Image (cartoon, rainbow, N blue to C red):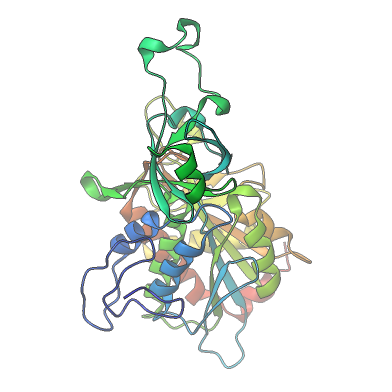
Length: 380
């Protein structure tokens, strides 16, 4: 049965992107690895996140007290605190949208011209398998001129957008019946497991952040926490923080922590600009982070024996933390980053343990916040 918006994952069913859930007993919660892979597989190009929202709704249904969707499309999920008068409200936020493309023209020869939705690197696109979300989903491939036929002077240059076409194998008249200018195109790539619990997929940026919140929500089931905790899956981050602006304004938390991905080390990258995969959550600090939030995250990690790394930043832009920090009169904001290789490709790769440890850190942080800490946020 299809997964309804108000449904839960306690029953056997199918995700809206067509991938079937494994059978499991009623009440059993999916583990974080399964959840991450299903999240990564879900379609949710920026501005068109509904299929991915369905998956999020199902994952969190048994872990929170309320789920709603704001007018822009962000999922706002509340787990109430134990205190009769909660000392603070905490908002964890990770963006739900992924990069993709949009149909800009249908050529008479039966090809689709495309343009990017979010920061797509056009150099990776030739030969990529995609899905065109028209009146029905159509498989397609992004065309590439064979090297034998290329202009020799252009062989070492990156492709231009007007040189990239999607081929669905259809004549133009049939294609126009099924596809319109403005239809969205997503990468057609299933998440895969690699050695040492590494996982690669098309949209770990930032479904990994959603999985971190999922792990945190699971961990909070075992902990006592006085504060109200909001888990928010924001939309449209890849094109300008729209979901984090509206959802933060709607929740107006006392504390906000964004969860996103950061560049993981690989050969050829300077050590001071990257994070260590497997090194645990990266706790950010800089002008985008409230110093008391940073210090509390650090102390919590140390008290709980969670391996972590530090991520200095000089520019507040780049993640939902920027919008959270700037909402209304301001929110005391922090940022956790999950190390990720190959960002904005279809094989974004991470270590599962970094996701789990990041979620556990957030849960322990939420359980440690009390009225005394809340009162200290106004003092620098």
